[in-house]
Image (cartoon, rainbow, N blue to C red; front, side, top):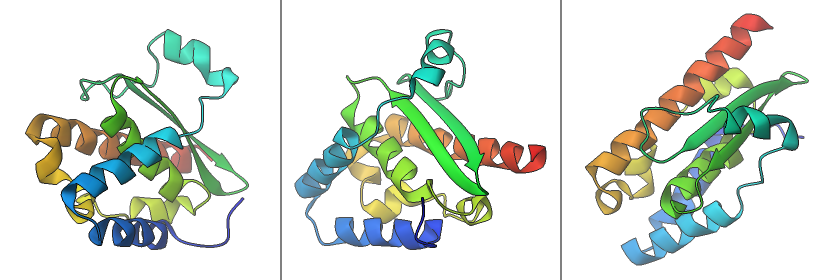
Length: 148
């Protein structure tokens, strides 16, 4: 499930990919992450349809689940298809955090949009919502650690 890479190491690699790009190319790469977000497992679809695990602070319908599998973090997410930039950001988080030690996920920086060079391109309202997604994931990870 994992190669032992920490969440920060995974995020650093992703940030490096974005750093060499101009703003238009950054948005294109973000859309690639949106396309690569795995579909929501069937076991969570009814919960999503019932409005469970929604990040209410985000205007876009974003739903997140966190599990610990063999001591490693596994994230599942569903984002409305009409919001590809939000879906791309969530895709980055799922990619970077899944398969890592949950404590390393808690140590990830909260300024990811800025580090990716996307804060200005996405606007303040969207940036606020995406920040809420990061905080929501952090709370779910803390809860998962407390319950194990």
